[in-house]
Image 1 (cartoon, rainbow, N blue to C red):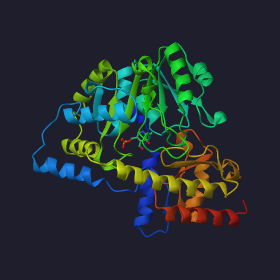
Image 2: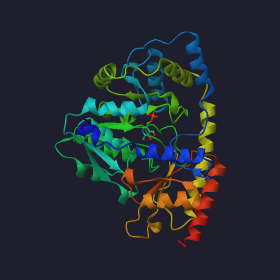
Image 3: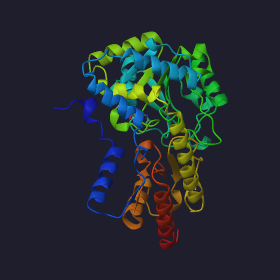
Image 4: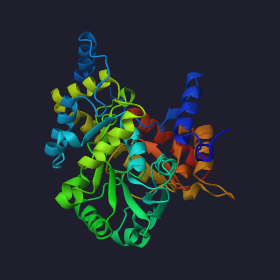
Length: 393
Ligand code: PLP
């Protein structure tokens, strides 16, 4: 009854593990949960007030498919001023989270059989989104270069069928932030081969001390004409449940994206759009800076803690987003042991839930979220330390 496209699609393993851990917690289990993909900060009050105002004013009808004009203007302005990436409102399509923008973009860009270059490790949903659109993910392993895609590796992966390079900068799950020079070198290869670059920059506002974020489309007008930037409100503003994201694309791509969306889901919720608009227009920057400083503090606790827990190893220091990606090869001592085994042991014997990297194309890494209270990070590290002593690792 089920099509081969859908039938080959596993349920999201990250969502499944998160649900499992939450169920254990609800039963009263003593677990520190480091699996989540969302900040523990509340939605900024300005955004909530914007939503309440929208309801009070009866802004509860369909909006234009690509979003209300003021929101598209505000997003374009934000990209232009904050990320140095000039955009017009007509280039912005608002979506039900960044996820919908990403899921639709491969249908818009790819013919069946077109190849999408996907640096690995990658966010769990990427290969499935690509396949659902009939395109083919081509993984490029970046583990030998500190999880940083090099122009040489990119060039080697290009074939006559390559259509898209998919970047996620800062990266979930690795925490790597590529610098301007590295991105410019990748842009050079993309232009050489006529690729379109889809740049998922959902973590672009969460970049820590010592790293600097560069939006791919800000590298220059030539590459901007071949770039689709994906962003959203889930991470920057801790608004995961409101489901507002966007794509910023060359005008014909934005129009095609809008057409696909118009025949599938239509615009995202009007109330959420007004909440997002209020977040952008309100004076939220001071609060965002405060949150960024707190996240930076938590990152340091996580990074330094993991460094003090051999045989755990940080392949790359976390620079952006809110994940530390930890090599657990030293704990894979039995035949067939992998990150799933380690995550299972940590859950059962240490009371710490971590995300195994198996479905991120990293079967010997686990992902630890530091989007939780500093005390919980310290407690988790403490428990892992005791576990390591007990198993004499
Ligand atoms: N892209 C990446 C890399 C993510 O990690 C996530 C969420 O976890 C998303 C996109 C989707 O975010 P949204 O909540 O805006 O759909």
